[in-house]
Length: 298
Image (tube, rainbow, N blue to C red):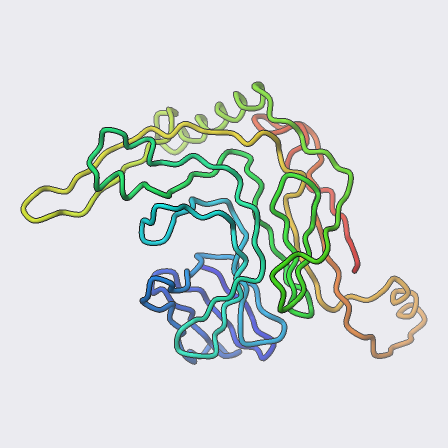
């Protein structure tokens, strides 16, 4: 479940089960529901990771954990990007506008697993892509003016898109190098995942995928089980976190506060980025997820 608080105090909750956004006032009282819609272009309700539009009346969706991509309605063509969406909540039905396009790394198409299976199962898996291990996440931050900044690759590259635009206007880069994924790293990851599955009561073997088709007439439902082999991205992403703040001030503010001077400060925004460096841990890269925080003020 994802939630966001708009500037007027309205709390927006993404209700994945009901395919809607639930809106509450500041006291927690229910106000109304904004549905995704029933057409083929209906808004996708994210299970989590929504952010408020500082201008009000909308939330942004996109980013978060890596997930399976699926073409709409089982279409033949899979997605070619990871979009960042602005979801308008003014009406009874949510309205989505793409505000930025994140890079979608190459993925394994599950249709190849269904060779020799029933046509219905092959159709269900067509256009479904599974993310690779160490795939760079799409990370998104919302700026004070309603623009967005996102990271979608292994490199230190922060892409800024102004409000009302769809194209990236600026890229902020830093000379940090991503760590190559070696055979030793892959084996360590496999051992760690197998140990985790055993702790949950499994066998520690490969991940399995069960696909169940719909019943047709008097015929029984078709089903099949496939073994999922881990595929690996070629390098470990440098960035592991991105967050934005909207009302921070310059460094002279701390001195002014020490002197007891209080005055109105115009809004600025600052971007916080966590860069992955740290000691070795079993089964993960030698520069893992221990964060070295950095800040950038624009």
